[in-house]
Image (cartoon, rainbow, N blue to C red; front, side, top):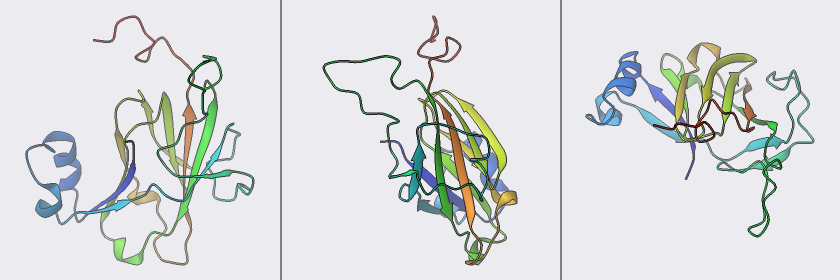
Length: 173
């Protein structure tokens, strides 16, 4: 099952360990790391418009969803291969607790097909191609800490088939 997780770490060592030897150590105990489930409270729109990455964008018409989520439900007995090919938007508003200040904050997405661009408070943090692998971004520098501050994560999700991104290309491995 695909999830979105918020990670917090007390220092920069987490980033190196996370990308280098995550399977060899227990990161939570080694680096005093917390993990927060982040799957609830997302908003979804089947189309992307410029400005959706910004906090002041009016998302009142968006659908309330929980991650994991599919951009469209396709019946079992008939598949229109073009039905799911779109550029859509996921958004989540949240407060970054004051207690998080001084820690490195990462968001990890377990999968978002095909090309996902993750924004935090209007700033593009990462573009990830391949919906079958997870990705993480250090979002610390873009957060406004404190319970009175609202932060926004927006994901521009391009789910169109692309011959340069598996599994649609000719050679996968």
